[in-house]
Image 1 (cartoon, helix red, strand yellow):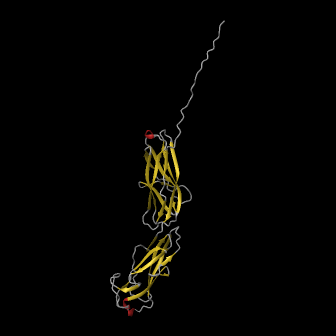
Image 2: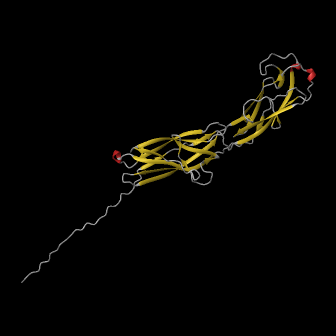
Image 3: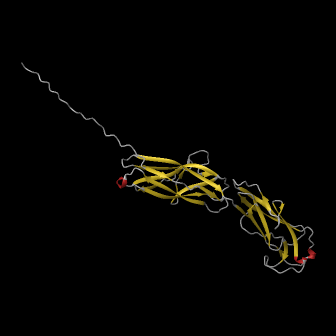
Length: 305
């Protein structure tokens, strides 16, 4: 009898596919930022603070990972407007004189690119605040961003909040309107009650006082040239009395002008404070010696006491 043999053939069929490597966030970026920056609105040049950004390899890939290009840039696209400002002060974030801050109204800032050696890199940046602005203390949240490619060609990006903050430094300035630090009030031929005036400009972040100093004791004195030290006068015929006022208030060496309106949280501008000098209305020119009479007045600004 024929036997039928069954042949069992087994096949192991391996079916598979090459799956792409998952992107690993092997680059971490950290920075303490510049902190809160003291801003002096009376300064003539930009306020600049440096800060560092650390780029860290955190996958322990070692030198075999090669040098990875990394781009870093900063964005301000957070309401409220205006963008690229904090407390009314425009700012840039610079690396080697290039602004890296991108905003919806200035979107063309070029990212900073560098070749990243596995391990860590520490990069220097600076933040620059525009000078002479009417500022308020404040903080604005922007972002620091980075992008790189891993060894498999996968794009890795990241972002973290980056606070920009300014604090008004107690500051005060005074100058003569129209520029310059000195100005002559020329009375010509003196007459009783004659008045000459000019405008002063002041800026302050805190309550302030303006003090007045006089070379000849708050009197016009017969002297040539004006401002030289001279000996005691022979008598009252060498002096002419006058009075001074600032913004409508009397001012003298013993009576400063005081303004308490600045709160300490913002800059207050005083574009035109009139300073007036009035000759004694009771002056009798015939009682004075002929000659040139003058005084040198110095005005200075200080914190209010």
